[in-house]
Image (cartoon, rainbow over the protein chains, first blue to last red):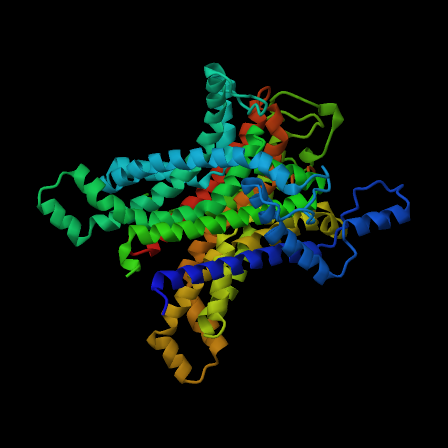
Length: 338
Length: 275
């Protein structure tokens, strides 16, 4: 019998593949159920034979198993192979039909690759900052459980959690850009970082968008960290550590933190879809040319291939993050692997 | 967090009633365009002034609040209905349970905003053509919200069904020959009311946020029937010159969502013995 970690890995991989397939199928189902005509936005003066030729070129009249097969093949096999080609210089995907944007007539993945770094930078910075704020805040709240400070902070995090990013973003722009005039209200996408001055401008224009997203992430994480740290603080081994004479700092950092991190990892993974939504809205408010901006502008332009590819890509990223969280979970709680 | 659930629910009910009653009471024709009254400043007749088509801003704001609350309530109803259905089915049927729970977990992991946007993009045109701008948007938005947020409620109800179906009184009912669906409706659901109401309140908050997000991105209600999100969407370019126009709907929306969330949280805390 194969060793257990290998079996577990194989099972995770299988379920990952099945979820990807299910998501791709769901998106395809939505597209084929939709009653709209993708050519509706074309001029009405188009002769019928040109219209028919366009439909054929877009593959709209093929029977649905052909369209499904093509979509699955393009999205799950050709595009990853293209990625592999550009990364490692192989030529596996040469000549294969790629997903083409209807609007810009270029490969969808090229458009996405231009936009993805901005989104990843925004979300990465916000997650780093959010974790850096949430960890001490949650632990401190649990330490001061039921004090006035704890209750006030809970009210604050609940408020920040309940308010959607477009309300907090609006408020921050109004206070810091319009009233005080300290920070730019929008994001200048054409800025190139060449020297210290342009780096400073870049950092200044990143502050507000990152703050909006960080607020959401901090509120989400702090609430769960506080609850789980309160639970851990009541455990027997914490009482023993206290009886040994450990100070609150050593107690919280050495004993409580790792234990209360376990549910937090799950929350990071489970809360990711919500944060992705927040990032889309934040990009829209501050006009950052990331994935979310591309998604919204493609929706307004009726560019289906781009919209469906971004939806699939974001879903894939979230599923992968869940897989990572699962691994982190086992690392934090070795009891699970035994 | 000393807000008592009864008080929070009173505040919630009063707010909903107030918002539903306000627009008809407040000058019924004030949201119709009137070009003789364009761009007026605040006065006694128009406390927030009028916009560039001569519509009273306060009346539009209240109408927006009403539409947001109505969509929130409808979205909540659909979410709870779907969630309860799936949860009951999963809890009662051994055979369906693993499949339904796998589906629930998969849906929970999906990023819902892109999915919602995709559905709205595909179905918006045909539905509004068939049902009219306002009704079509309302039906579409409510359905999309229900379809993307039933999962939490389903998990909660399933857990509650599993807990209750092991208890004496449901087993007694089963032993007396009551059919399973009647056990579910007469004995299990009434006892699961507390978590159900809690999750319904929280679902209303998230439904309102989802609706206003769609409207804010310009994919929700048409300009003639503004929700608070569409008012914000319209006002965003004028934030520098006319901040009150964007801040007023933002503040009203924040107030409504906060009241709903506080009511939900205080309910949750009073039913959660760990807190």
